[in-house]
Length: 349
Image (tube, rainbow, N blue to C red; front, top):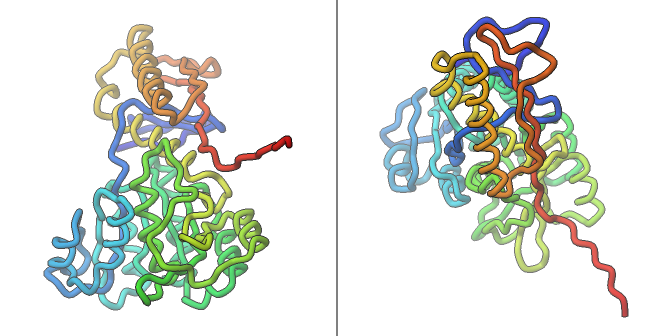
């Protein structure tokens, strides 16, 4: 399926829908499934074999495939709200090439959020971010959740913040907090699948800010100053307010809101899919065909507007380019709706 970004000085050759965000967005036509988390697994003892895909939506099936003692990452994703988990089985002792093969294999499968099951070295994190960016340029949009490279990283928020800076991207989320559950400790890397499931399972018209996570505590409680610093660096922080542990703010490493980025991803993913399925090669590129495309895009965006995903919709032909031959240029704009996250009170007594 062709698609992705385009440059007016070098137009793509393959038939497809090519979209640009010029701090705006290209539109979406039909809603897609947004609940699939991708997790590569290297420890398993059930019927699964190496270098294969398995889609699981419940713990029973996961246990039979991978062994009940090896499915905590999958359980985290499902418990957080993911519809399903797309598991790729790595060799027991994966090397760099095995991780590269894994990423290449995932290129052929649709999913919404990716997370490792455990710690991976910084070079693999860097390679994964490069992979996310390459997919984005080619028209495939998904988020990735990172955690620590080694367990000791969670002891110092400055180390986690440095990771956020290194992995800066609007599609990347970096968890810097480990957690304890029933006496067991899970590093930020091992708890990343829960955050991935939370992102995938949350409707695109809602935020994960202040979402309560079902843990007993964080492994390191941060001060108010540390929390503010980490948020400014684009880190995802879990805080204990004395009663419960919650996501402090749903941010990507680019200090953009996860809610906004997921809305943009949904728009790009769905418009491309529907254009390929319904419009490309089937609609005449004349006034009537262009009007039909514009109407369909506008109608869907208005559906999103009614669901409080976005507003301020503008759809039309792009006046900067001529929509002739087999090429159509649309100029589309909208504003993503944010969640209420800061409330300021003025109390007069």
